[in-house]
Image 1 (cartoon, helix red, strand yellow):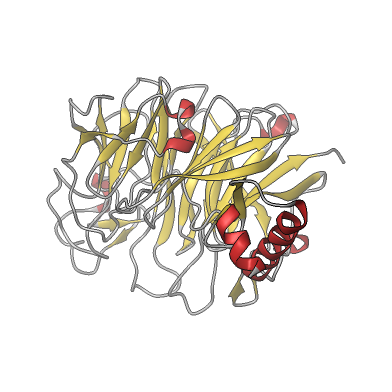
Image 2 (cartoon, rainbow, N blue to C red):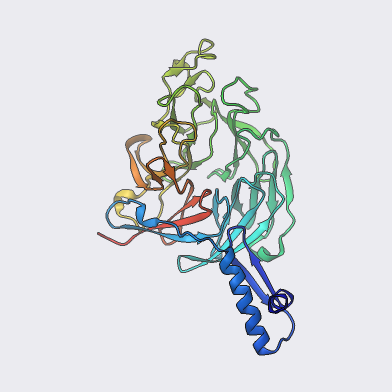
Amino acid sequence: MLFALAVAFVSMTISRDGILTRRTVRGNLPSIALRAGFACAALAFAQAAPAQRLPLERIKLPPGFEISVFADGVPDARSLALGKSNVLFVGTRADRVYAVRYREAKAVQVITLASGLRMPNGVALKDGALYVAEVNRILRFDDVEAQLDAQPKPVVVTDRYPRETHHGWKFIRFGPDGGLYVPVGAPCNICDPDPARYALISRIRPDGSGYEVFARGVRNSVGFDWDPRSGELWFTDNGRDMLGDELPSDELNHAPKPEMHFGYPYCHQGDTADPEFGRKRSCSEFSPPAVKLGPHVAALGMRFYTGDQFPAEYRNNIFIAEHGSWNRSKKIGYRVARVVVEGGRVLKHEVFAEGWLQGESAWGRPVDIEVMPDGSLLVSDDHAGAIYRIAYRGR
């Protein structure tokens, strides 16, 4: 009876991971019944809540750094885009886009901004509008921060992209030139698809017009950023599967100009001809990677560090989220890498944060990176449904 009263007078929003995101009281109950109703609601919430906390003590970082949970209860958290009013937007490979309100380096509310979408992985902001990439469409939510609770209806910017779901989820970002960069992965592990539609990074205007191919021979990029010093594009690319544990490596590539070709499907990691398609063209015809990131590490989101909280040697470094291998006999990845870049060249590549993989068991999978206004670093995790915050506290 009391639980029925709680249902009648207490409206709760609980995420799929059991996180209480909103509670309102309807009507006027006697205080004792109201307290009982809340008690029953709290019991239901406790039963729904995750039973296991995230073992952050297992994460190894350089001296002086610390990691904490910025937000949990964000199922399938993937691409990140930072708003202006203490709001973080989060894309997923499921059907939802989230808005996370935060205060003092900690999430205070997780809002379902949109649902029923088709793999809305990519999120990007421009002029107050949130752009969301589905498999074949780019959507735009105008004046989004003014209507977070309203589940606003989007405008379709374009639906010109392919419908295949194999490597069909998209990371998107606006470049320093004002264009929206949209990758299209190969619709396969290895094949020779239409080069005007697949295995590329495209660029369009904010209104969806002006489609052009910026980079070719890109098997599946799920992360890119521009060097703040030069304005030049850098991006990750996932190597093909089924050539064994050690081949090929994932790549960090540098594209200082349009129309560069990075080898797929003919050449992998800059020096390895594909067994099936390598006879058609030589590796010498293509741009090699700036650095090999490791075989099957699943390098996804990346950002240049532009904050001022970390020590000076980290300024303008690239941080890369490694989602981790799925079919390697010994797992690899599941970490965050650091790459030092100077003058368009890679000087150092090393592990920055690791511990999500314990032996052959992974409890988390990093996906994307975001630099916060206070200089801390956010890392999304679609496996744990969480977003972490890495901060520097001094040695």
